[in-house]
Image (tube, rainbow, N blue to C red; front, top):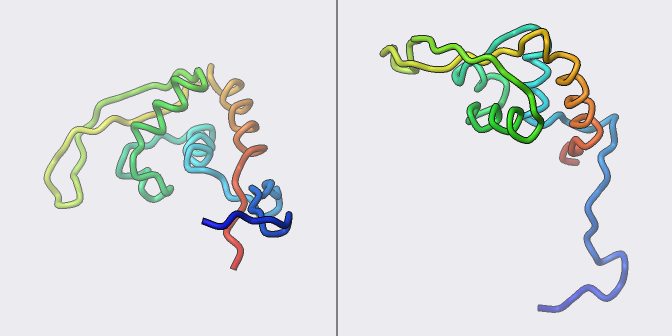
Amino acid sequence: MKKATRPEEQSRPRKADSSTATPTKIARILAHLLAGASVNRFEAERLGDHCLPSTIAVLANRNGLLLQRQQERVPNNWGAPCTVTRYSLPASEHKRARAVLATFKRTSRPTSEN
């Protein structure tokens, strides 16, 4: 494989431009929870998160947030009942969550350019 020899041929990661940056799915979920809302795995689909439990694990384990969990029965996509977890952010965690969200906004990725 031929290597790029000129600097303009080498690919470099682009820095996020805050005017065109899109929030990550973790940032979208955290902002939703900070707004006082709660979410379960089916509702998270509308926010662009297809695997909410892993997103919640990142918020809890990597960022130290304590999230409330409540089991509930809801109809699945075919109408049959299933058990899911509803996640919410207690008011005592809002200050820490805002700080975490601020770090996500500083490191969000730029939108694709077409």
